[in-house]
Image 1 (tube, rainbow, N blue to C red):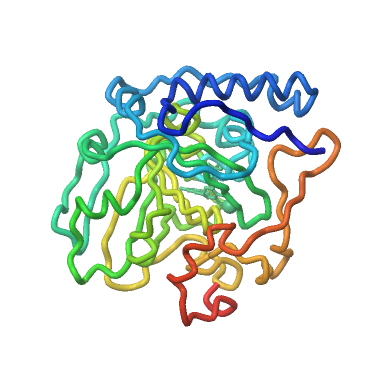
Image 2 (image 1 turned 90 degrees about the horizontal axis):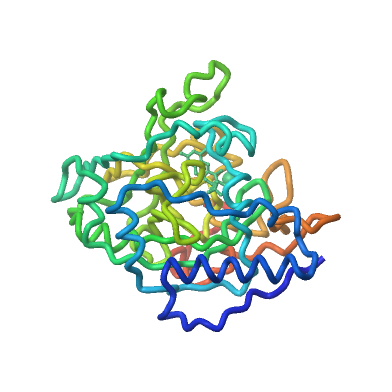
Length: 325
Ligand SMILES: Nc1nc2c(c(=O)[nH]1)N[C@H]1C(S)=C(S)[C@@H](COP(=O)(O)O)O[C@H]1N2
Ligand SMILES: [Mo]
């Protein structure tokens, strides 16, 4: 079953979070009228944004939608109830169900390593000068499902420029909070993850304009389950690179420790570029299940090289992407 093409009369430059909200309601109404995906839209209310005023003010001033996808947006209810966030548990429903007591504010981020502006900063201060924009990106999980999400945030490059890394910085490592009070599954004895969750990028990947720091989605601050209050989004890489709830950004000289690569490097490479020609050892990566499913069937689509973001190809010139997975 195919969903309606998303329709809007708004000019991109006019879009504010309020408009996004209205637009979403129109989109939902259209889908319901056609009897498409009714189940997933029924409870599709945006939870009232309980973030502090500074964050809501931040989200209310935006450049509008700067990057769009041709794809149908994944409804808010799916984006916020089908998640991978192992700090809350391994089940897809756990992040939403187990994050009710999670407190994303106040939040601090430590900046360390080969960088001029090292220190620990309040999130509000760290992102004060960042201009917010909306970007609609496909998110492709290594488990072969995918979504299309309207993120709010700013380019990672704009933050890096403010932080002024030195010439010794060749990679960036990102670290998630490992506060047991916040994340109930971190104490699980059977977890094979060496907390905190860590991810990383080569400096030129981090500086690519598509690399994004999200502080919101669907016009509101990030729900806990999606990585509140600050997460990375790298749309041409498998979802596990898009690390959530970041408390430290380290500028380093060597390829950093990254969580899934450390668990199984043959299954989860450091680069993790979406590549339909390189299968996971236990499943094909040629196609993906695009959420939401149809009422009676999975919505299967072909997986594209770099998740369709072919403009990043020049970052990997001369590299054998069957070897550097
Ligand atoms: N800290 C942390 N970040 C994480 C994960 C995680 O378990 N912990 N899961 C990753 C995986 S596997 C995916 S697919 C995406 C899912 O993002 P979403 O739940 O917002 O769709 O988050 C990534 N970021
Ligand atoms: Mo994933």
